[in-house]
Length: 326
Image (cartoon, rainbow, N blue to C red; front, side, top):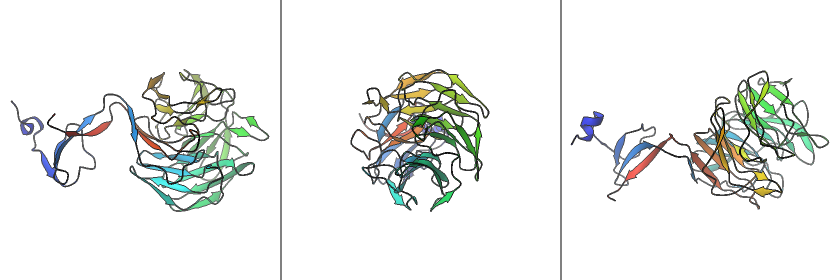
């Protein structure tokens, strides 16, 4: 029988801590925990428990990566200013928003983000920018807006849909160049409470309402085009935020009429949505971060408000496994 060294060209390493970026097929012995470990690819996607938010809440601005996520503001029975960052294990409270608010649109990462629009005692157009340490007020949205969706980065952002005064769903789409907002071509279907991911030139918008829809539209940098629907029409869902284009996306949780809070998770492959493993905790108004391969779902309402964080590992993503005698 061939040895591991003959197959891999190296011996099994003995290390005090697990490698930070193991590759598929790598095997090592952890001398601290005294176990043999290896890196394998997952065969099916699944959700697992992550570190809970410090403040249970819903409807905040969210974004970032699965191991570098941000949640700002939200609602916990009152408007929140709290900002928290996730490092892949735990959430840490950092400097607050200037204005307590909820129902904002979040764009960006833990080092450079936007909280755009939202609700205080009324809908607002206010935008705050995060520089990794503090929030600073920058140029307002063209109009007050709540429950819109976003994509892209801080110097190249995109916001679409939402609800504008007095209480109307909008199809408006705006780009952000790091300083100013510019109105561009509208969504095909006006709606709020929708999901979104992608970049300023290649994004995806899905679900929303009212009325509750399953409609999905793809953005090519100039126009929106309707593509195949979600399997389950819903709104107030969470979504992956950092997919590079409109060919991958993850949609999870949300509400369906009358309303009913759901755990449904769907994966977009560029053509169709496929039902995959459900969230462990049903919830709506849920925060999202990461990509369709590795993502986070955090906060939301069950009801009541929850601090629960779940981590998604999609099929094909790397996973560290511990070898046992059984």
